[in-house]
Length: 301
Image 1: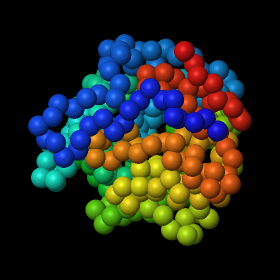
Image 2 (image 1 turned 45 degrees about the horizontal axis):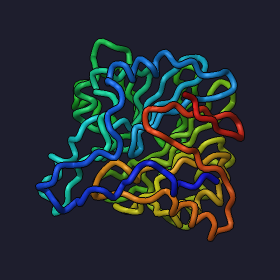
Image 3 (image 1 turned 90 degrees about the horizontal axis):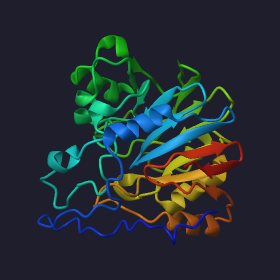
Image 4 (image 1 turned 135 degrees about the vertical axis):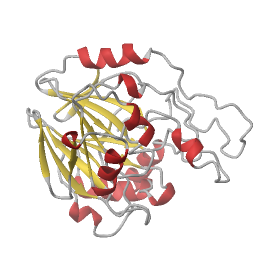
């Protein structure tokens, strides 16, 4: 498995309790928003692969050779910092906004639940209304789509166990255990592409002994939360899930965005070693597409 100790990113550089300090970005803004979105739109994924761009937190863009472009939980503002300013710690983002909401150009906008860093009202309000993007999520997220002015014809409700056809991709809502009582409708997503490859995103989920029995098995790629804060899976719990579902490639996520809720992806390697679980971790980078083939991964520059 890839180790992250040589990562160029230092996630602990900001003090979440120092409200007077300027936030230091983990990575500088390397591309203009429009140029980055255009590079994604024009990228040609091979027939036998899927391309993935990581936006931080639980944000992903995915594309297959058909050109179908799917966003999962794109948090493209810093709205949480203002919305939760009464908390004793900061929720500021320490990653740049890679794509401004007005520039987001995807076919399908998927959200796993209604927490603001996953179904962000400001992002949704600012996504252009002249496009054909369809918004898909569980009950509470669906309500936010409507409140933010998304037309009824472009909102779709999805329940755990339900499947929807999204262009060339089949999206199945998977079980996730709510992390608090503000939203009892958490889900994950299992995406099956036309070439047969599968991408599973856990969404935010708490841990329970029976959780792994309810999740998909043997997927090609699994993006799993490891931050441990706010009742999400921690590294040891994530390792137990990975041990049960046995994905081909593992993407640790939800550890990098907010200054109060960070983690080290190397701790997942430690947890997997302790659990005697072998596997490959994707060497995710910001701004760079990663190509996933069945059983292997390749950086695409």
